[in-house]
Length: 258
Ligand SMILES: Cc1cc2nc3c(=O)[nH]c(=O)nc-3n(C[C@H](O)[C@H](O)[C@H](O)COP(=O)(O)OP(=O)(O)OC[C@H]3O[C@@H](n4cnc5c(N)ncnc54)[C@H](O)[C@@H]3O)c2cc1C
Image 1: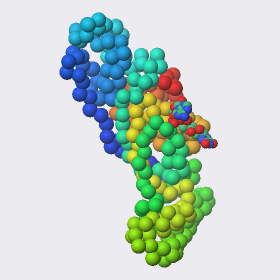
Image 2: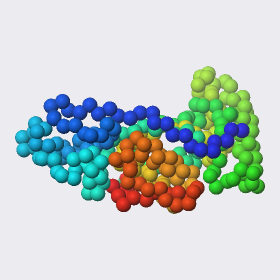
Image 3: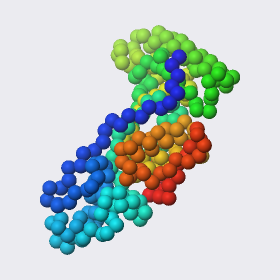
């Protein structure tokens, strides 16, 4: 039985910032998501500088000339819609169906998830809940239960395959068997999901699921997501601090709810 001990996050896609050739302005950030958010914010006030080519364009405001300063002011003034122009697509693996059931409640993300109707889950792995330490009695209970579920999945799959063998469509035959057998898989069954979201939606996810009240597995994912996005775009996610004891970390920011 394959046990997943940590989620894996891969950045699948990020943006390109092409700028507007007729507007004489450049961000000092080479992160496209940061540059496009700054551009969108500056457009609201035509604050690209006096030489940008706009009639009535505003001068740059001292203290808000760099991308870092500009986005910090966006967070401070809660001008959150500007953050929606920065987008990342992440591949999440090694997460449980319990976790993704909570994840998909976030309505501003787009999702594509491994289908348990299409894919044969006979060799499915299981995500070890972070509260369970290996070598303990709790671990033995959990492992035996997953193994049993796996065996029962295979047995039921074989039974239903036999039952629907006259179904002419091979695809439908498989789906009918797999969609029935999957009812025996536990919440710990591993899954994979592609998630696309803008910086505002990612921030909301990190705040809600990086809170001490969140489930430990999704909180661990929120922490890893934060680390990933802080590396991608420090000016959009750098305000978060990770606090708390090792293994019980959570996030804090003075700009929550932007
Ligand atoms: C610790 C914790 C415990 C939870 N326990 C439960 C539980 O026991 N049962 C349960 O069912 N769920 C539970 N949830 C899920 C929770 O209720 C939310 O569904 C989930 O966190 C998604 O966040 P969100 O509602 O802020 O929405 P998102 O979809 O992430 O949307 C972000 C924001 O957009 C706005 N928004 C989005 N859609 C609408 C809308 N239709 N109308 C108005 N505003 C909207 C809101 O301001 C919202 O905060 C829990 C969540 C947490 C973090």
